Length: 264
Image 1 (cartoon, rainbow, N blue to C red):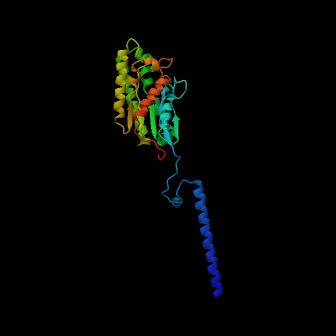
Image 2: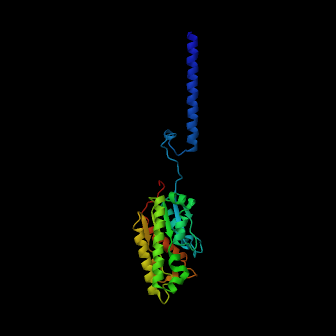
Image 3: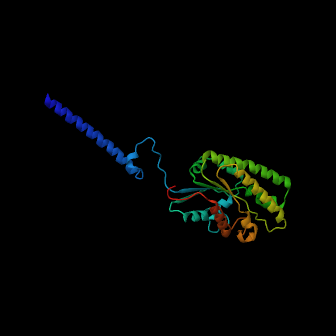
């Protein structure tokens, strides 16, 4: 009888040890898959999914976001990345979804796409250039100025910009949104006083809309191009050149108060 009891205890001990070794094996496998996670927390239900380190920039908008006119292809967002990279050792990535000719209503539609919403939700900083195509319409609206038509354009633009910002905030409540204001590429034409007034009015409306949304920052660029406008424009006399984009990037960078570091 005593022999049988001894064998049973030995068998039970072996089973317990085997189960312990199996459990340890699963823990080590999990740890190898997630080496940055403390060993004692692996397997806990409240463990959050591990995300890659780095700073994610999302650029949306028109040809200014694409960098049209910059021979290097960087555009303001490329120079901005270089500026931010000087402040951190963390990897900075850019998702650039700028489209030449994009209008505000088209941006509102773009923001409903699944991939754009995913990028928006994951972004740490968002940058937008929009409104130029709504107002300038290839230059026609400011060379053949009609007050009623400009007013209608502004009304439509304002409505769609609210849609854009509301959509972004519904997906990402915290990331700062930097909306780049318009400059006047026609500042050296005969009716420059009138066109400049229209652009300033447009920018004021944009700034007021931004003020209604948390962490939505209006970035003025009008003054950068106000004097010697052709010095900062590409050969098409509409888009910025390399120097123009560099100045835009400096302006945006000066307004970024969010600290970039490798712990983010």
